[in-house]
Image (tube, rainbow, N blue to C red; front, side, top):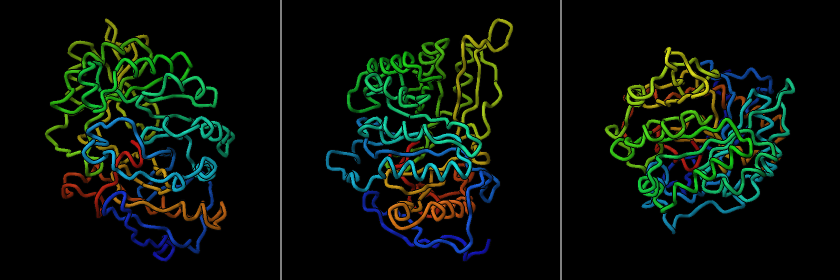
Amino acid sequence: MNDRDLPRIVPLIDLRLSALPMPVTDHLPESRISGTGQLTDTLGRPLRDLRISVTDRCNFRCNYCMPKAIFDKDYAYLPHQALLSFEEITRVAKVFVAHGVQKIRLTGGEPLLRKNVELLVEQLAALRTPQGQALDITLTTNGSLLARKARELKAAGLQRVTVSLDGLDDTVFRSMNDVDFPVADVLAGIEAAQAAGLGPIKINMVVKRGTNEHEILPMARHFRGSGIVLRFIEYMDVGATNGWRMNEVLPSSEVVKLIHAELPLVQLEPSNPGETAARWGYADACGQHDKALGEIGVISSVTQAFCGSCNRARLSTEGKLFLCLFASKGYDLRSLIRGDASDADLSSAIGHIWQGRSDRYSELRSALAPDTGFGGRRVEMSYIGG
């Protein structure tokens, strides 16, 4: 492939994200790429995981994601007509599946704020890989609406949920979500998801030094033996509004050491290629993994980058394709979806974009200037999901 085969991009200022430049794919390359399931990027990484943001809105104001000082009552969210419809999302998801995607995760913002999101789940659950296999359909939520939505999500075809929960202490939790939302309601949502059969459930805890590290052991004790996988995530420098500082990162190695001192752990093999979390199982008296006690995971994108196996693409609420959580640019697929492009055109555009992918921000973090991504301000996590 030569330079003229790459999609030409033109800077477009998205005022909703201040001066973040958003390139637009404005014409299709002459050479065509069809969906064979074998698509790889410049580093040989396949395309297996698609994360779809269905809304840029959230009812929490967690300071590491949507701090209230920025996302206040006057913040201009995307108008409804700018969002991809469920039919548009399903169309582009079908093309991604032909290129090798096997797992689709719905994110936000808070995805359960999107009206009738279970209808989208139903449409996505009907898709099949070229080999005729069903997709792994999952959803990440803050759990605030899960108690009332769990059963209909399961009925629609959702298989699993991941719930963000940064502590069990109600005071700490209310402080971190910054809207005074009680932890008991999230725990009720988790119970409802278990009862509905949305499992295995995963709990994501972002650990921020000086804020909630004292909640690590209470969380581990609470979910040990529950059938729920608790994952600890290093506080990341996503976007430019959360005031990230390296001294607020608690390395995953310290998390494991802390838990292991009270609840012995044994390291487990990765469950899937490209798995982001290192797995640790609770050990029995003989030092072997006791499956009844379950496991934890640690996601170490700051101290132990896993860029080399990253197989994820991200589709924003308004149809921009991002190739990295820390990216500073995206590709406007909506202009193709709502234009006269055929599915073959869309497939070829996605193929060329992925083939040109070289993103590995976490591996390069120490060499980059603060508050920059690849050539510009990074996109906010609330815009493309975690």
